[in-house]
Length: 106
Image (cartoon, rainbow, N blue to C red; front, side, top):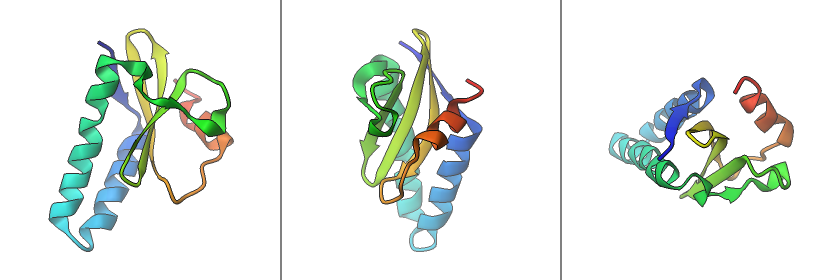
């Protein structure tokens, strides 16, 4: 079982998602955030469950789980730790350099 660590960027992403969705429905915003957080249970039990992030090529440490319209992107930092780097809306373009920037200090 690995420890999940949410980066500041990923927490900011969750907050932004909640604020955006809550403009239409506070209930749905809360449900969406709860489900995104619960996805990390899969990572805790099997960190390689997510697919490799296509934008990163064959770099095995960067993985993602797609949930609804969101890509929960994480980096396996060690056999004991996985850092959630960002929660990214799938309609937006994700650049490889952005991911490197998210993971720079990890």
